[in-house]
Image (cartoon, rainbow over all chains, first blue to last red; front, side, top):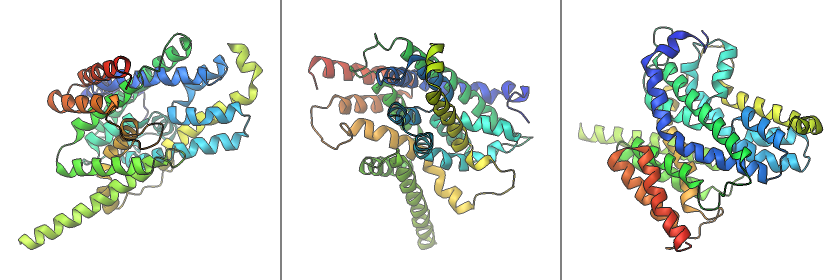
Length: 245
Length: 114
């Protein structure tokens, strides 16, 4: 199956994914603009900044690679750094895998490329606990397609605008914080019970404590803390049930 | 603009490699066709991973100042984040959340210089 398959784009879940992503997109667009401005102000030649913006599709990797590129670091160093910054996506791909296997390999790679943070968060949050996508159940993949398309399109428009108008867009008044607020809003709506609230508090604490780590590894630490907490809560609940029984 | 690309072939190769890194890291575990499933225990443990990833991006942005923990009452971001979180919990409306947060942030930051 391919990502261009009409069944995916006609599925109502695709529209839903577009709608869910569109709700957060303004905040992400603010981040995109800020990233574009940062790339030009950092000193990347305009053409290179534009090429990077529309091909790399990873703000973290772009901002980490930029100083290395400008310093003339060897390619493997630049790529390895980006790989480390993107380590969290390797974990995400583990969870996205069941939904993607219905696609042929080249399309899977394209789908992977499009799995930015929010494409993963929204899709996995909605369909992570249910049965995976399959030939008879395209809903999760259709939803992903909707999310990924809006995410990709709005991000690219925003970052190109940021690059084009870098000299006139002021960013020191807190434009970038709009992106943080959008994710905070999403986070609040995803907290459903005290267990998820506890996990979020723990993950936030772990991320702050581990923030000094290089390569955005604090995100990986935070996810690891959340996995540990989830397994411990399961165990605790099991013993509660046993004691009650 | 095209000249930039011709003048900096080394940067162009670096960028193409970075795009490949994006694709390969994000599709890492679905590159192979071999059928396998995640152990149920791991799958269950990872149910909060999306929440944790979001929290890990948001929390340092709100709580840390240039990467350091230097709490002060005069931090516009704290009030903005609290107002935005409250509004999000109440109305579940993302655009409104951004608007409320920025409406708190800007007067404190630009007006009071927090």
